[in-house]
Length: 239
Ligand SMILES: NC(=O)c1ccc[n+]([C@@H]2O[C@H](COP(=O)([O-])OP(=O)(O)OC[C@H]3O[C@@H](n4cnc5c(N)ncnc54)[C@H](OP(=O)(O)O)[C@@H]3O)[C@@H](O)[C@H]2O)c1
Image (tube, rainbow, N blue to C red):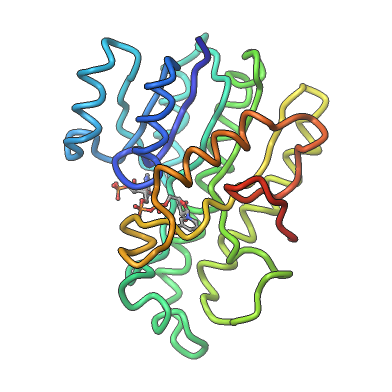
């Protein structure tokens, strides 16, 4: 059975990825900053009879990522899902929109969004490229956002979040080109507006549907579809 590595697996879309891949018989490596805090994740692990392995990982901790990758030397990873992400201290469902207006920038918070949303995935990909290259499927994806899309931005605002996810997209585009000769397939995904802690209770999409859709998109990724920006329902987004 294939192996998937999922970051930010304690809640929201990450937890749902764990649930669905495990139910499908995959071997799942699930990371969270503090796995012991997440009861649903621990329950899934107990029920999976060794097919779900939990690891503590902060994606902003480059040294921790190197140690984690070394601990998994020799393990092949078919799909690396860079899911962990942040909209900053105020979130989206909270004061996110006001907090990220022009004139309101909190530069420490902005830098943290870059560390988690862009630099963390970059570091994970550098640390795990060999594990993925040695697998059958050789796929790397990251949870981006339509908010990264310049072509879809009709509303303005959200400077910090938009720019951190646009940086993530630029990183994945280069990676798709650079790693193609090793057979790797790389793409950013937009999960839709999904009802998680980040998306808020009013979001129209249930995490189950978003993740089921993204799993289909991942399954359909080919070399020809690498380096392009995909939405959860299979539609392609403009950069
Ligand atoms: N929901 C939406 O509508 C939506 C739309 C567009 C894009 N996205 C993207 O989808 C991804 C998943 O979001 P979600 O909706 O599931 O949000 P969520 O419920 O807020 O979950 C975010 C996850 O990221 C983890 N995380 C945050 N900072 C981290 C760090 N430094 N190291 C490791 N993990 C960290 C959190 O872990 P802790 O439990 O430790 O805090 C949590 O598991 C994110 O990348 C987000 O930007 C979501």
